[in-house]
Image (cartoon, rainbow, N blue to C red):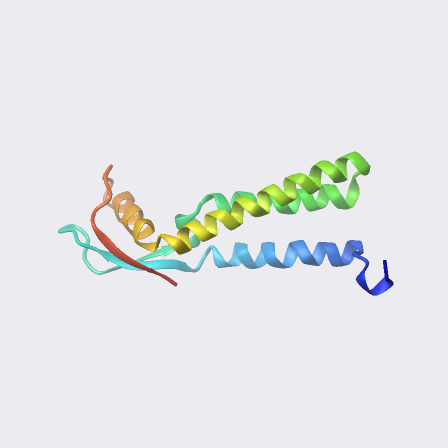
Length: 128
């Protein structure tokens, strides 16, 4: 492998930490906006990433801890940490894609949670 393409500890740390911190920062932003057709809910509802996909924050933490294990552990620990890192990253990706693919359901679930209802009202929503 050429020296330019080698994945050093610094490069692998940046490859994991930069997207993890970016995603963690984006969980504070609105991922879906919309409105509900309900008497008790008036106006526009904005759903943050942390509320839309609460598991994303936990999976980002798992990625960072797995990276730490990969950087400090032996051969077996690196292998296990690598598998955990890949699975956590895929899980976070799936959660983000689900929110982006179904913004209406995300808005409806947020309105139902705000109104303490068990069923989600009719709503409209768009991904942001």
